[in-house]
Image (cartoon, rainbow, N blue to C red; front, side, top):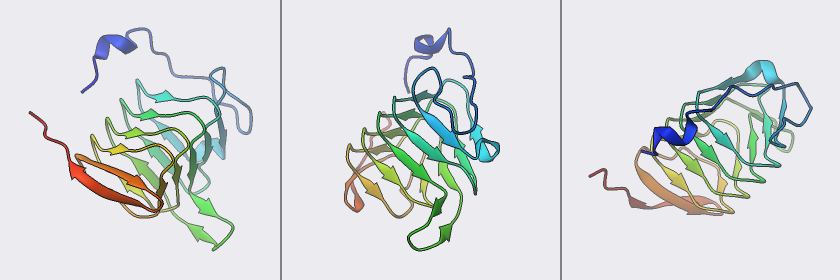
Length: 136
């Protein structure tokens, strides 16, 4: 797990629907967002929380990512859940209904269509589990 001292000065950000935060990421349907403490969301990330987005504590999301709880292409509507201490690489897209497991890592430029279990590395388009993470 990351060094908790990295976030000693972490404060819950001001999030206004459809307006960039001071960190330059944006949320639509902010009432559907549950944001855990000590999260790190990269600049220019877009979160559509209309049907729920849960981001647990210690989650890291790279810049230019997209999290969608609704897809207008196929009319999919479902909650997105990023579990504790997972990491999402820059320029990745998470589609409706996906859960990313605790401590898991999603490589940059990935398209995540299905759930990713705890303690694995996954990447690609579509993202696939590549290997497990040894917790020792």
